[in-house]
Image (cartoon, rainbow, N blue to C red; front, top):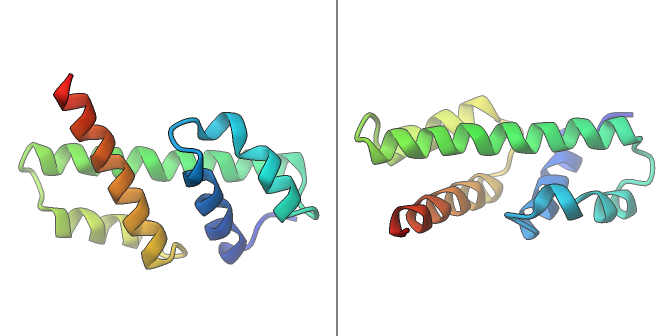
Length: 106
């Protein structure tokens, strides 16, 4: 049975704890948190996490290139993924913008 929106938010929170090494280690705690979920449910959750992070990175690039402002970027992210809590959206944005700043330093 696929994860509910609430369960996915929890799974995404767990995913973010291990960022940027998320794909490697997220599955083990997910199995403990959601024993009812199948391997394909976890594959789907991982795909969704990666999709959210890709959009956030794209939006961060647009902010960095002065195409949109940060408020618009966060609004777009929230509209695309309305099931995520405000806390999860903020954490996503923080991680992506932090990674972008680190990459710009190199």
